[in-house]
Amino acid sequence: MRKQKMEEKPPADEGEGRKTKVKRKLVILAGAVIVAIALAGYLMVGGSTAQAKPAPKPGNVVKLDSIFLNLSDGHYLKLGMALQETTDVTADVDGSQALDAAIELFSRVSMAQLNNADQRDAIKKQLISKIESIYPDKVMDVYYTEFVMQ
Image 1 (cartoon, rainbow, N blue to C red):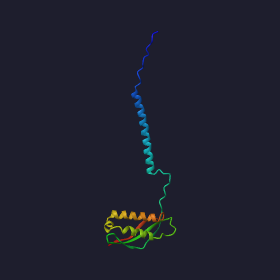
Image 2: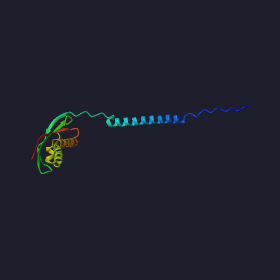
Image 3: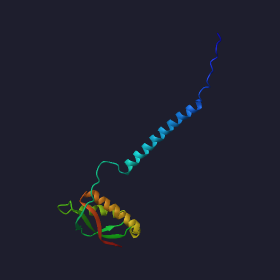
Image 4: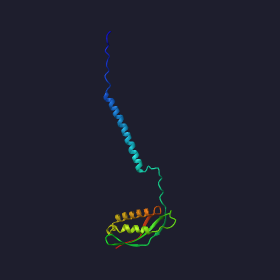
């Protein structure tokens, strides 16, 4: 009996098998990265399930007595303010804390800063933010009724 030599098949190209495995891993990794980025964007943009609070509606405007303030550079400011209440307010707010916040803010500011329109607007935004935190859901805006510097 003659031994037949079995033909050896050439081994499958191992390089191609590795390439497909690497490609699969890359596709899976890329998919995971895309999902992670999408989730992060969703959470950053406001994907919370909490419903947004409706914008407050304007109610009464409470005019406060004018006050004289010392500015940081030795000049003076006569400031009159009015508080825009929301409709949630049942009795007018006491403006003493709002005046105190104005004194605290403007006593750190110079006349040169108040002469600059951009800086004056930024300071007013700070004042509104402070007053809204003092009177949450009660005061929604601040109006200057007098603003005289010397």
